[in-house]
Length: 272
Image (cartoon, rainbow, N blue to C red):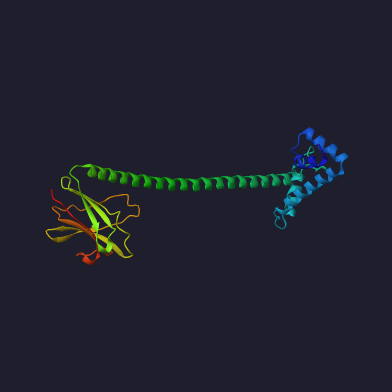
């Protein structure tokens, strides 16, 4: 292993912290003798740890040192043990205060990194869950709409195929010669549907209004919603014994009486 790789392998930090194996410690000490830069690197690591411990140390209150020395002296006087020897820190031994501080700092940083990692993962999971729930809600709405439209189409198909259903074509007038519509009238089922696909889109603020002519009098059958797709027939009120059906263009919301000058289509009902 070259010197650069040896310096960056992490073994020097383990040696300084006293966590290297005996074999690793011997290898470090051999490199220290052979390569002065290794010795300088170890000294730099120890210096950095000392500075870190110093920066995070707590200043003792005034007089603490004197009180501690006084108590220690009193204890030595009354409880002196000949076998007790003062602990002397030998050169090159581990400073446990520094090592403990360093390890606690590493533990704190590692815990913070792990906590942040799981927070981000949790946030991603929550965002994905919200997105999935929104997609499912939209899918549910789409399915309900399609199911509703399918039921309407089925009902209309049954009505159109019924032999009792009468087709009443409504032809365009002078003001809308190309317009047309169709009323499907079933006196047995008492249902009526309107196909208004042949009507031009109404101007802004206007709506088409359907009328049934009964006994020579117009009967309001409601305003129409013209859909751009025109793929669905519109159910309309059933009226007994109509003479004709007509559609006029009226202000939005409709009128109680038809505007005859805005008559777009009309068709007579032929009684069987």
